[in-house]
Amino acid sequence: MHDKSFSMQVLGWLNSVERKRYKRFVSKQQANQYLLARALLRSQLSKRVPDVLPHEWVFVVDEYGKPRLADGFSHLNLHFNLSHSEDLVVLALSEGLDLGVDVECIHRPVFNMALAKRYFARTELADLMRFNGKQQVKRIAQLWTLKESYLKACGLGIRMPLAKLKFCFAGRYGLDFSISSSWTQSLPAEDASFIGLFGLGADYSLALTIETDTAVDASAIEINEWTGLSSQLSDLSCRLLRKTAG
Image (cartoon, rainbow, N blue to C red):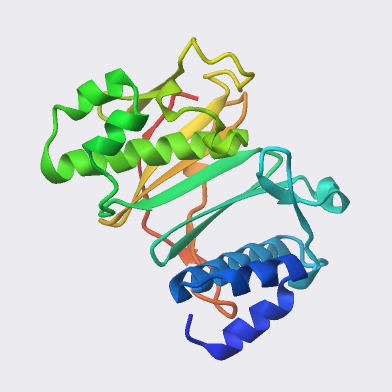
């Protein structure tokens, strides 16, 4: 991200709102992270639809704050979601299906029992007590990414208390998911989403939620690495650890 030509090219793609947001960042790391995310999103959309150049994409934010393509691109039926942690940016892209993605560095100090007691369900807390040290921290980060990916797919963000979403690690590879009966706002049925937990190297947890009422073949989910504007996507070692039955 210290390549001046990269920055100049991507800044040329941004609209006025994006440029203003970029200039507001005080932290250089956050500014670079934002620019990288916009570069990844615009370049990959244009790779999917070559007739639309990177600077021509127009984005809007829905009533819940979730970014999407403007109405002029609705015929493409493309859905996307972005997440970032440390120096890593992740883009989830789909044709026809709403989705949400979250990635977290598991070594962040915030992933501790104080956070878990504030945001997690009682059943999740009970499960966490079976672990200690690094294993407990890792499980907290994994639960956090699962909850965040689901809320981002639904477009709810922080409007839904995280404790209302309950995850249980079932068996060796399974993942059970339920929503508290005390939550009355309309949501996709519990079995109408594919939720997968992935291990991204030794340092990151990644979760992906896809809203669909049909079964998802996890092996069909492509996970690639992008290293720059002139580079091709390459296979990335990202292991599926657990998934819901859907």
